[in-house]
View 1: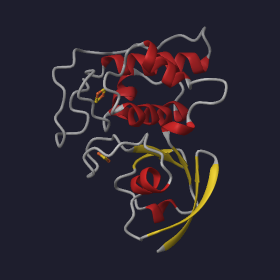
View 2 (view 1 turned 180 degrees about the horizontal axis):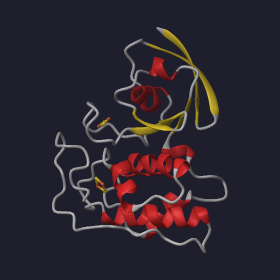
View 3 (view 1 turned 90 degrees about the vertical axis):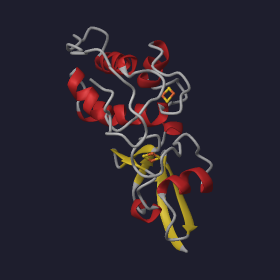
View 4 (view 1 turned 30 degrees about the vertical axis):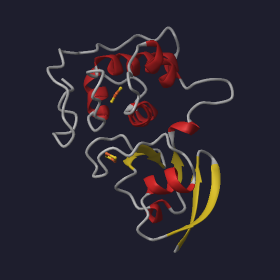
Length: 183
Ligand code: FES
Ligand code: FES
């Protein structure tokens, strides 16, 4: 067993887990945080995306031991007592989710983007979401939602960069090229 000290959603946890435990298993099975989903389990779908020290990572590919001493943000830590995060509000308002399975990962990938780049272009949003596969929405509404959230975070008067969207010809299958449906 490995002793771990990990801050998750602002709260420090001291845990012990077998060395082969992934960060995803630690979150879901040891801490009961099931927002990060187990999809492909091989780094293809992005359903398990969380932020580690602000960087989007596939928690299924990261060992819990690699997160020792670091700070993890999951979807459960995004809202505040005052309400949902603007990304969560925008995904809801723009119907960017249907079944919702991809949502926590997509929203956290978008958060990492907006933290680093408050006014992303459509191409930059597509790049940021390229590792988050969705079987339901076709992505266009997600990209619109990220633009809306960026605008809300910058202030209502901010000018919206061009979306630069084209039609999404297909929804990629798991195991396919990451983000192949984003166009
Ligand atoms: Fe981690 Fe698919 S479950 S990338
Ligand atoms: Fe169903 Fe994305 S909303 S997988």
